[in-house]
Amino acid sequence: DLQTIRVDRDPEGHDRVVLVTLNRPKALNALNTELMTELTHTLGELDADPAVGAIVITGSPRAFAAGADIKEMAEQTFADVYTGQWFGAWDTLAGVRTPLIAAVAGYALGGGCELAMMCDILLAADTAVFGQPEIKIGVIPGIGGSQRLTRAIGKAKAMDMCLTGRNMDVTEAERAGLVARIIPADELLEQALAVAATIAGMSKPVTMMAKEAVNRAFETTLAEGVRFERRLFYSTFAMADQREGMKAFVEKRPASFQHR
Ligand code: HXC
Image 1 (spheres, rainbow, N blue to C red):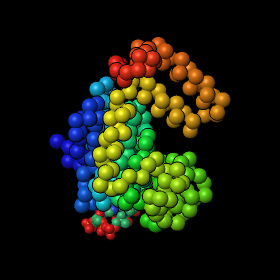
Image 2 (tube, helix red, strand yellow; image 1 turned 90 degrees about the vertical axis):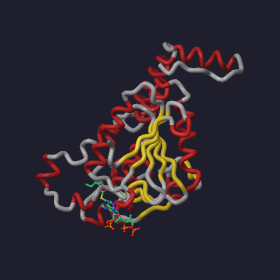
Image 3 (cartoon, rainbow, N blue to C red; image 1 turned 60 degrees about the horizontal axis):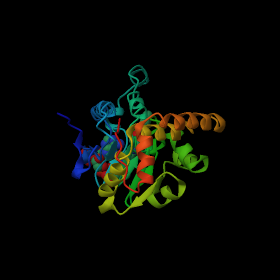
């Protein structure tokens, strides 16, 4: 009964992978309340499911998402957005512990760029365009754009984008460190699913730890981050997957993890 997103489990036979497709193509996947509610609720459920090893979020060839729904926001007052905790539900998404892959083609603007940046690996088609154009409609980014963009690409380019509202093409975005890989548009989904399948074939708790450790780099000092990593590293030796992974290497065969 989902209206604004589609959810495919094990797409194209990829075990333990889920594909979530934003599905408001006529509005270029503008993120209205219904879509945000469906997306955050669905991702919360998938995150709690041990049978899910990795999640791909994608849009249409023309737009990953062209931002928060401006038509819906246009009439809101300060009191509406403040008391209603507008965009607060997105925090659920930042708390998802299962690896998330954004497969971006076309426009990823405003909230669309922010959604892509909340994912762990950003894969982009050669058609992808990124921007934080909120300034042009009299607001600023509201779902973490000013913070995550600055951490991803540095102050110089983040200021340029947030103050002028200009877009970045995929080449600039990759060079600046926003995008992990550029992929020909007609191969984007196939390659994103393959990346997700690779991750989903690893030990689930260990992928979660790797994600947690990398994310900690944005929250703490280097010394504390290294201590955090070391504790997680030691704890991997408490699981059968560590023994299986190393035994498989020694025996020159692929590892078969328990995914506990
Ligand atoms: C609502 C949107 C929309 C949006 C596009 N549409 N973006 N509707 N909210 N963010 C709708 C259009 O109204 C139109 O529907 C249809 O999608 C196709 O869009 P067009 O503009 O006709 O397409 P095109 O000429 O190709 O231009 C594409 C575009 C442009 C460059 C992406 O649509 C655009 O600039 N969109 C807005 C981008 C933006 O400012 N995003 C940031 C939003 S603010 P109809 O039915 O009218 O033909 C944001 C803030 C988060 O995200 C936090 C703030 C507090």
